[in-house]
Length: 608
Image 1 (cartoon, helix red, strand yellow):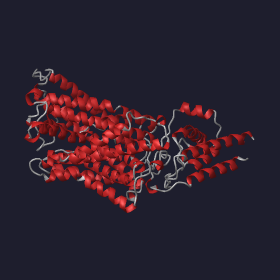
Image 2 (cartoon, helix red, strand yellow):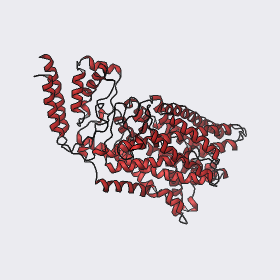
Image 3 (cartoon, rainbow, N blue to C red):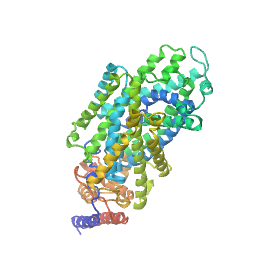
Image 4 (cartoon, rainbow, N blue to C red):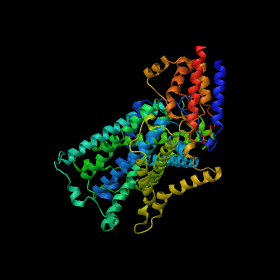
């Protein structure tokens, strides 16, 4: 039997298996290319992703938002609120990291939501996520002076228009400055607390004893008032933690994501404990909740750290810290514009955004998306034009917190559905690049806490008198999400993707060390023509992760012989729509038999 006849026979067998599939959400599949997905390049290195993951979360929320948290919650409420939110973030990040390490595709979490849950969820989540980041950007750049707003916007625009490589390098150094700053502030805070400042006054736990660990929120007596003070900190702390999931968006432009993304995710506890919990604890020791400088009603220019240093009698350091905090705002703003533009481009790749947004520069920059998102950053001048930058900051923070909680809830739901799907399809988790601990239980915990914050996040609007502005800014994201979700559902008549039909293969990343590739190819003499034919026959089929060594072997053989280094999905046409399987779980085993028989046929043909 000739090799061509063997391949044709087995390709026919593969086609007979694929005929059992139905097109449930073909218009929502992400189109991939050999460049890493939908035309994006891969300029980000492991050091970029690691520093972005560590420093991406540090911004205005930590340096400025903690002032209001300390005033409303007291030192104990501040620390407890940040502890709960840190545990929530860990649950969300490990769930997201497990999925993105396996599927580093454009659009990140919302693309996966459309695949693992339903197309309408991916659509609504994607647009809400984009809305979230065009709102976060003005919140990060809020100042009381329009000149400073304009200066920071120019830096943010320049970094993002420079391309992903420039963004990665600048963000690396910006985040390095932020990390050094926060570590230095924690050390200075410990020294001041111990009496090492110019006034030589030891503070210790004096403010904890004078004002109490918890306060009565808005003079509401009893345990109810103390609980509300703690809960108010949780809501505002959500704004401070929003942004860590930038790792998922950057994964689509990162080389070797199966190795780099897990490393970035595993560092999450380091930044949580060191940067946020330690900072919250030190701030509670350094500044009294009754300090008038904590009032943000008229200005947004002071951090609790700066207040503590000024109270200690240190004259020069506050100016240095303010300069470092300025770079922190720049860094956060650059990251926000990057995420919003890549989110918009991810929506385009799924057919959920206008076509003109798909325009790319030669270096892979989605310039049309960057231009649109840059226009929305002009909202930063709204605070400069008003009398109270602190008030504007509060409005932006409320909207962002609820948007972030909705996105995190969707991430947890997506993770739950994915784990249910791989169980139904018989896929083993030990084949994953990163196995998140305590799953899917952490995802259930994250979903519960997110829903709690979403529902009760605007309770302050009902205290004493109804506050219309606070109510609208807090709860506006909920009807927006519902309109997007239901509108898409009824227009396209879509629904939940059946567990057995969930695509657990397309976009899966494969990268191995060079030595492992050489070991595989040393014993396999597969020609470029053979590899191409097999890849063409198998590319559109579902197959369990246990077949990856065969596909890795073949794809490397092709790249080694002149096709260029690529993964086994490189032959997928950019605009081809692939149908999801609706057959029984035994479909994967049928495809496995086809692969095995094809390899046997190849070997037999060579022997003849």
